[in-house]
Length: 189
Image 1 (cartoon, one colour):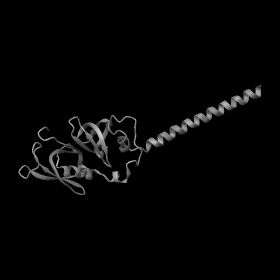
Image 2 (tube, rainbow, N blue to C red):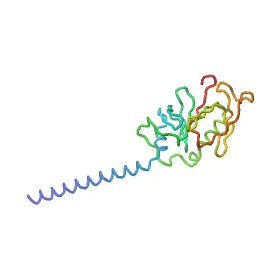
Image 3 (cartoon, helix red, strand yellow):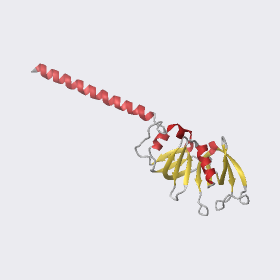
Image 4 (cartoon, rainbow, N blue to C red):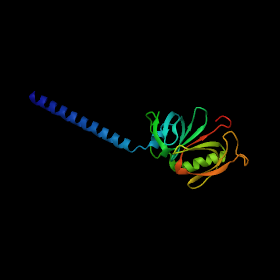
C-alpha cells in the first residue's frame, strides 16, 4: 500500500511539474510571437473597425479602417471622406480589438503599394485634398504629381476645382513630411 501511495505521489509531482513547464513554455512562446507582431499587422486585423489615431502633426484622426498599405492606412471619416494616414506619424491607436493579421499575408504586390503610390491615386482622381504635415502645417489643393520623394500640390481654395485661374501656386512637399491627406468635399470643408 505504501509503495502505491509513493508512486501515486511521485506521479502527481511529475504531472504537476510537466504542466508547469508547459505553461511556462506556452507563455514564453506567446511572448515571442507577440514580440514579432508589427503595428501594421495589428492594424490589418482591424479592417472594418472604427479607430481613433493620434498622429504627429495632425492630432486626432478618426474613422473606419478601409485598407492598410506598406506605410499607410486608409480610413473613411464620419463625413464619408477618405483619410490617408502615413503610418510613420501614428503615435497611438484605439479600437483595434483582438485580431491580428498574419505577417506576410498581404502578398508581394500589396507590399509595394507604398504612400507614394497611394497619393498617385489621388492625383489620378483629381480630388481636392488637405495635406497635413508632421509639423502641423496644412495645405489645400489638388495633387498634380508625385515624384520619387515628393508631392506636387496645386494650391487653390477648397471650394474650387483645380483650374489655372484658381491655382495660387504649386508647392512641392517632401513625402516623409506628410502625416495625413484628407479628401475634401467641394463647398463643404
